[in-house]
Length: 348
Image (cartoon, rainbow, N blue to C red; front, side):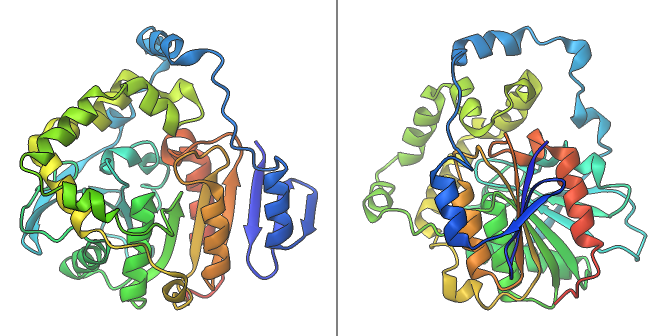
């Protein structure tokens, strides 16, 4: 598997073992445009054929990872909401920092079930369901801003008397991890962003105003119900073979609750823009960014911008991987995370 590895100052590119060269972001951008990081997707089989393939997947070759992960699910009251989280690994050890996993938009800690087995023997792990998602409360009183989500993560660490932790966030969870590091660098040892969301502004004002329409949350539910499920999963993955019924059920189950759509409406209203470059410049925390070159949701260009704006960041791009990095490359992702955490570079 080819891996594009980019480190800041200078940009050291390793496309495959034995091949490396130094060049600037501008030159990398030119190569991106010329097809070095092509985002073209091959859809020759079509989603209908893939639907049949999922239904006929050989059960003996599909391992139900969720059943293999030893889960200790708990609910705690934090900042006025009931927060669901899971513990994995050995929580008695003090020689390794705990990892806090933060999921992305329309997701839950279920999205890390394939990554956790590759890390739990080395690190204590907490996997959170953010308020409004998964099994956590869909509170009408919670303020669903990215800043407040970052504060909640920090308060979770304080509630468990965790002095320092590594935050691992996927998509929107990556932006929340950066928010937490921006708010309190002393408690966030390192950050890992898996296709981390960034550089997005607020939700359009017209859409926010529309959200005050009576029963708008029901319209949202109807909108999602009419979406083609298989087409949606195909848009966020590159390796179609990972799409199973168990996977689809795990992602879709929380979306059946009407309360979820009420929370989604509040998120539309409360969500401010992502951290601007000026704020990113102030984050001295070491950051590892991992991307898939076929990501159609948060393209690798966002990772390149992060590398420019974060003082202490490095970027790794996996070839032939889509947006769901923890699903498509869990073992390789864990290996990169482990190497990053065990590096001798100073924490800050």
